[in-house]
Length: 101
Length: 464
Image (cartoon, rainbow over all chains, first blue to last red):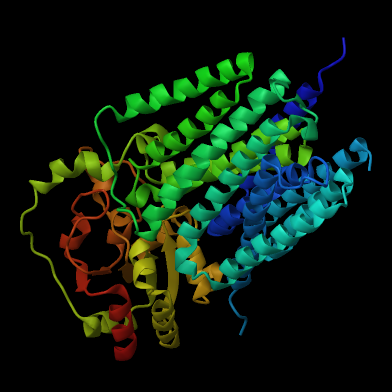
């Protein structure tokens, strides 16, 4: 019997939880705020789903209800992607080492 | 592009996201890490465009909306003051949650576009995944909105509790599970909408009983939820990038909540089930009596610190409220000119989100190698001449070590009282968030400086 592809996805999911666990524990506590803003930005990769949703169907009827939800999701995710990465960048620029005399 | 090829690209962007988080293990590698994250996102978006392959008029709209959202995001990112980071992050979480809900709705309305079957005949597994994604997304959205309103001060930060609250949450939670079951058997769209609506309600009810200094736990928890919602949608869309990211973000938020709970010596459920101040206020109010304390002014403080050989600064949420971080840095510069050794001690739950104090100090150009975590610096208080407590309270209370009756007993605290003298900047003798009196105020070696944190620090700078 063939293995259901779902099982593969579940394996990826569970292994990623473990990767996340070890990677996040190694994050230095002083960078916990940038950690939150960058996780925020990367979870907006949900925009992938939003793009598929908004381009679904024939190009004559691009404003069906399902597409509109897709467009709205694109706006939300885009705010997050740009906002999240840029604000993280802004914060990380501020972390400086002591100047050597 | 074949599905296999695009799956490989999604895997690459997943790996880049892992590297983005890995970079945060030290400030030197963190900026590079952020670029990895951006690269992962660009790859995911481009691959999606190519694999959909629909370059009709829809594409233009997608780009327009992308630019609109992107400019709003960029505008916010450049304009937001660093003290407003907690509410910004809460606001961003709500957007991820809502986006997850919208994608799930869209997949439910048009399953054929996502290869999930046809309307009224959606694959069972996809139906479960999308309703879970929608439910968690909706909880994340409404919960984050409440957190945002509380942090912004639009809504009172104190916990809102009422009788039977936990029972209602339990019933609503179970009804979501039951509705998902019915959805799978009936494929009815009304049930799908009910799941979304009930989840919005659950999100509100879940966050209103938590407030004040428990906010770091709430934000981390919502961070975690936004990850699980993304993972749910990732399973629906069979997209590896989303599954990997969802798992990363989910576990990241969970670890942060754990660290925050541990910083307060409270269990996760204790925090979730309601506020501290709400339950323990009665026990403290009857014991308030006038105990002797010493108070001083800026000149006294300046004199003490100028003649010290080492000073440790203990910042807290009050510093953020008063925006005193820049004045603080000027004070430290002046002290350093006098040959005083200065370092900063940060408690894990200082502020309103994990790492809040570190960002504010970084903004004021404090080098990060002068800033220490609780375990790193706690032994140094015994050898230090002056501890300057600015805007912190409960995290310095020695009662946590001595009085088993105290609600904060067992919480790790900074051993501020061990230093030769303590300067405590505070507006009054009032209790902190935990609703208990701080024993530190009445110690012989404590000098209270009653003033706004920023004003007091500026005055000290002048007398130095």
